[in-house]
Length: 254
Image 1: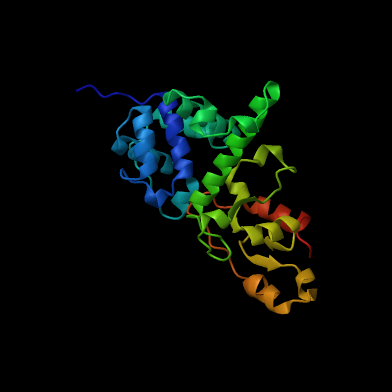
Image 2: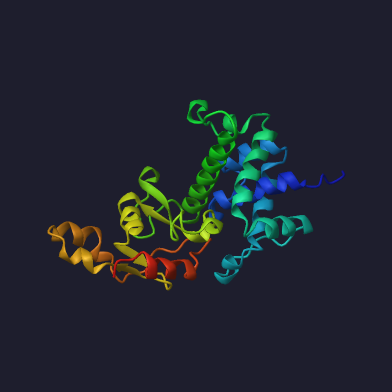
């Protein structure tokens, strides 16, 4: 029987899945793999293996002794190299492809409310921004197995994909998963305002400003007890030290 080769479009969708599903949960029985495999016309085992192929290109997995599958193709490598540092294009292009494979509009595929978006040129820009934000959140929560990297809280409704370099400060790195931390909503707010930071060696630092707060018990429970501890590191997309250094130097209240 002739082997049906993967297309470029199918491979881009597989990279989307690589970013969204925790690497240690990539199985042929994973609900999202079953769903997407059917949409793109591949078997669940084939999609699972394709996701594993991308793991072999990921230098962070290699450093941790995790080896992806070895039967990669030239197309796999081309897609990885094209999008590995171009996350915005990957997010939007891959979601458009999933919609096209599903014979749906992008809004239908992502279940976006029509009333949220105006008509005209602004509509496309707003939809793309929503798609990109959803992709960034999925990639960050997946990397941290949906657990806050400071507290270990594992309730997704309370978790935020927090930008290390703020969204407004660096357009190029907005969607880079290495520019993100998975934080609960309280610590996300504190990180965003500079009351806490994470140093380039992944150590939590708490601003001296919080020592002057009246409610010492709450501050101790929420913040001070985490001071000088290391965050729980993600399975992949390790936060870039240079991004953490930027936050420590420019956002953190010393």
